Each structure stands twice: as C-alpha cells, then as structure tokens.
Length: 136
Picture 1 (cartoon, rainbow, N blue to C red):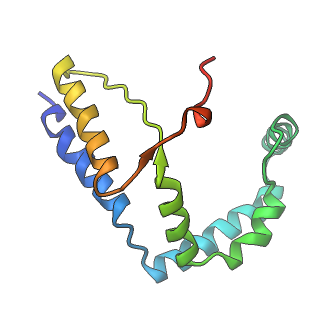
Picture 2: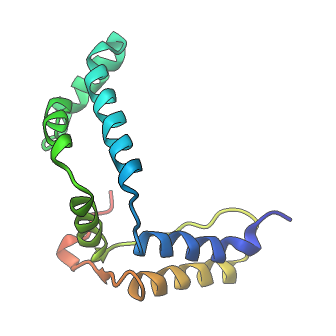
C-alpha cells in the first residue's frame, strides 16, 4: 500500500519544476511584500523568540540579521532569483535516505534517478573534494 510506487514520478516532477523555474511576477511581488512584513514584525514577537534569534546571531560566525534582510529585500528581482538558483544548482552534493515501505533495490534506483536528473536537466556538477563538509 501507500505511494511508494510513485516516488520516482514525484521525484522527477519536483526536479523538473526546479530545473525549469517559472516565477510569476504577481506572486513574486506578493511574497516579497509578505516576507518584508514578517521581517518588520519580528521585533514585536515574544521575548523568548527574540532572545533565541539574538542567541543564534551570536553563535553563528556569518549570518545576516533581520535588519540586513529588510534593507536588501526590496531590491531583489525575479532575474536575481533565477540567477541564484542556476548558480546554486550548478554544483551539488546529495545525500539520500529512503525510509518506509521501499525495498533496497528501489531505494538505490531512486538515488540513481536523482543523480541522473541532477546531471541531466539541472546540469549540476559534483562538488570538489575541498568543498565537502566534514562528517562530525
């Protein structure tokens, strides 16, 4: 039972959408406006939420803060997002874990399909060894 026999189709559908990114201008404008409101309203959140956010800023060496996001957001264009996606997907490292009612052969086939889609339509190249994250 379940949907495990359709996982390959779902994977292909999602990656095809990512590879051929289509951004509707009206939806983009709405998302920018909504995100801007969230950033501006963050200072009015509960004290514990604000404290947790400030703690994260202190613990992370390089991280943008909400004020920086608020300043940059209005200048972001659809072309910027598309260029960023293309650059982000030009190299990739993928780890897969298939859980559930899936046989080992099916899991390996899904992994192979993912790699094929990443190398094909998305034209992603593997990371260089120096770019790999260290296992902890």
